Length: 137
Image (cartoon, rainbow, N blue to C red; front, side):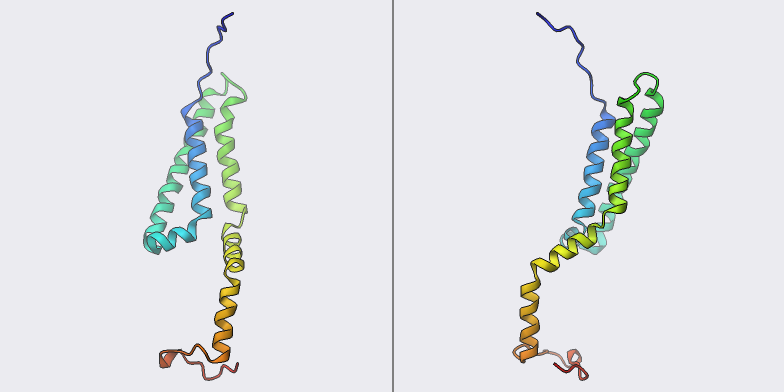
């Protein structure tokens, strides 16, 4: 018995919407690592490029929705819905606070070790302008 159903083609706008959304979320998650790797001067350019890519995906999904809403009711809204959900996630999830909190907790023991070395006098400033006269440990 052969199935004569025609295979449903997944629109390119859906793939583009998914890829641009994932890239936008990844750039928000790994922003500080990217700044460490490619410097503070180049990272904004990468972020701008991905932001424009995402904006293009949003515009494409709106156009796709408007052109195909009469043919299909439900399927055409999926790329736009993915974009809206991504915008909400990027706007309301505090990625920077999450990443900095995680970094603080991971490196807390090392930081406490340096503070104890400073307090005990084991670690001293190597330049004169790095000495705090008012600081009493």
